[in-house]
Length: 448
Image 1 (cartoon, rainbow, N blue to C red):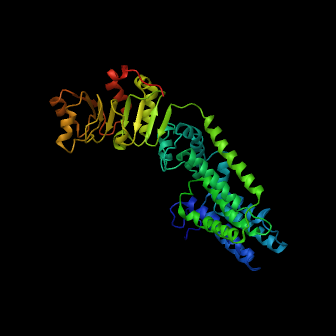
Image 2: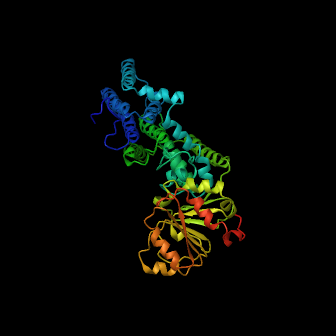
Image 3: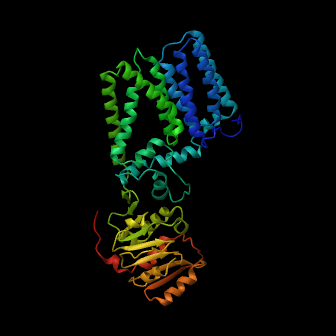
């Protein structure tokens, strides 16, 4: 942890923002000592300052905001007033942390935010702007752990190439990944936690666990920190402690906090619903996890289990370009399934990289940069298909193999893409060229 003035402190967690969230909860939790003994205040203040030095060195703006907002609950209008010597010590400690933050140039990050000249903030706002559309387009949710990839493929501007695992906000990440029941449960759980942690005149110390939860909620709004179990240790222990006291003393919150909490929960749920309902129209639809369609009709063309080495890590970008520029996709629609078992029957199926090991029910399949099959049986069933089109790059090591197969099997047609190897950058355009005259496109398609 010897990172004073060098880099960003992370305490071995591998992410300074998660470390900042952990430190923020610790900085607030130590104030429980102020309710134990008279000297507890000064011990808490010392620990608060020492942890604050560590927090500043994480250079996490979310952590800074979290400790400020949480501190208002722990030490502000809820906590008992302190005499002048203690207030002076608290003020001096805060001023010391501000001076230290200036020494490590933390203020420059704040200035960038206020001036709008900050790439990390710009990226966050770009992502969060798409959250309403992501919620509306996937009523059942995009699936746990799938929000970052969903944004990257289907909502990220095609001129950008950043990779994301989450939506850089724990709350929005889970609201996008959960179905509506999950969204309602998530919002209700947070509100219920705040109600149970709300202090009364007999239990003013409960303001400290409440402040810890507030700080965590704020930190989670700035980055995806709540996925780390480390940041939950202090909040959960605090919550269990309060719950134990309430059960033992039968000291439950009064009716007013519960009614206020119910209204807040309902208001947040309605707000999320209205937020997604007002999102601009989008051609993207996710009926369930692992299936995405483009267009207003049931697609006749389906990309099955995209191989990132062939279609690219941002294959969704090319799919959207193809949908916008190729009339065939606008007429027939385009679907993508991430698992072969979800591929629909009797449609034009598009496979990349690996050839399916067992026969598929389709009048036409397209293989993009396929590797030679592992088993002769694969070629046997391919030879029985009505129409097989193989798209390979000019410099692909597999071109000669498929050239021989196209000569041996009349149903296999070979299309060579100039200047490419196994990765086909404009795969949507290449596929459009080979299926443009397909009888499949002339068939009526069903409205959603």
